[in-house]
Structures are given as C-alpha cells and as structure tokens.
Image 1 (cartoon, rainbow, N blue to C red):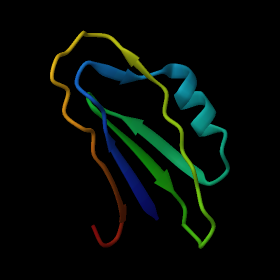
Image 2 (tube, one colour):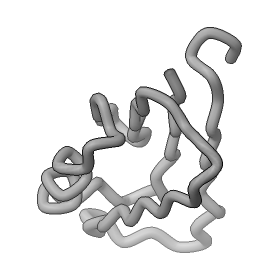
Image 3 (cartoon, helix red, strand yellow):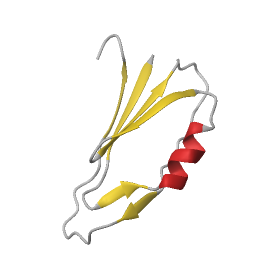
Image 4 (cartoon, helix red, strand yellow):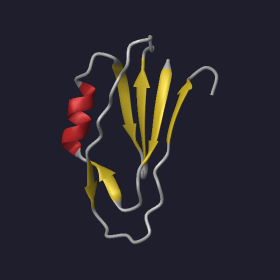
Length: 78
C-alpha cells in the first residue's frame, strides 16, 4: 500500500467536492482528512504516471504562506 501525505497550506481546507472526485478513482483505496493533512491511500503504484488534483477552500486569510509539503511512501516501509 502507498500513502500520499499532503500537508495543506495554513488557512485552507480540502473542498468537499474534491474529496468526492478523488474517492471515485479506482486506484484510491481510502482518504483521511485531519486538521491540516490529507492522507490518500493507494493499493499500489505502477510505472504509469498518475495525477491527483486537490481543490482547496480558503477559510482564513493568512499572510506569508509557507510552501505545502507532499510525501509519498510505502505503508510498510515509511
């Protein structure tokens, strides 16, 4: 299993429509949303290119935003 860990920008949340669109993709097994992190669980990856688009909603106006981070790792070997 592969996990994509997306740290959201401060003041932003994952749009509910974005979550619904992601859940309908066959490669995605599960999605978890915590306060400022989205976890996307994939059954496996192969050599095909994959694109995931996350739509965010700004709920709080922030200044000096820092870049968000994305980590991809094997569930069994973090």
